[in-house]
Length: 188
Image (tube, rainbow, N blue to C red; front, side, top):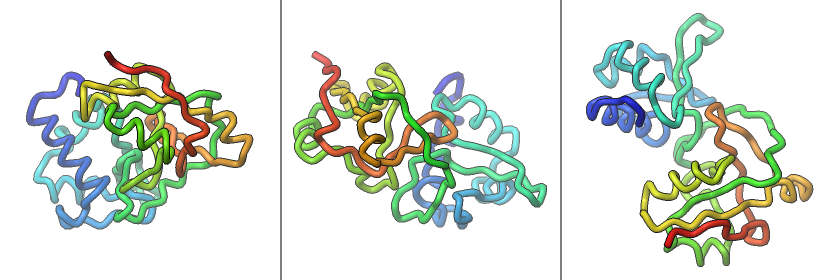
């Protein structure tokens, strides 16, 4: 995470946990679209608005979105990546992706993905990157030995698959059948 201290990285991870996976762990309830009033999050996490704003502004993946709601209250949510156990509709409209998207993963997952395709597993959607370097970075979160898949997103759209683009540019879709995947790059 760019330009964040260790404490700020820990705070970013705690915010991700609360806003993406376990809001109840901080005594919070997300609305139907994943939003929670900023003041409630500040109180729940025992932080200041300045600390929150710093993490939001400097998060390397723009994981969080802040906006003023119709009631004039500032709200925050995770841009994507919510667990299935958190009932959230991000309200993202369908969007036409580029013809090719990418998905980075540890090499250990490659054989199963080639056989079964990409599935969201515990998340609402499969997450796809618009470029190869980002997919490599994502794959390396869990292993230095990475395989990057090319996803024939344009063909998928022609076949009726729906894509959404999150606020931070991550492409989302329900699943990617194996016939729309090919290995783009592997690490030696």
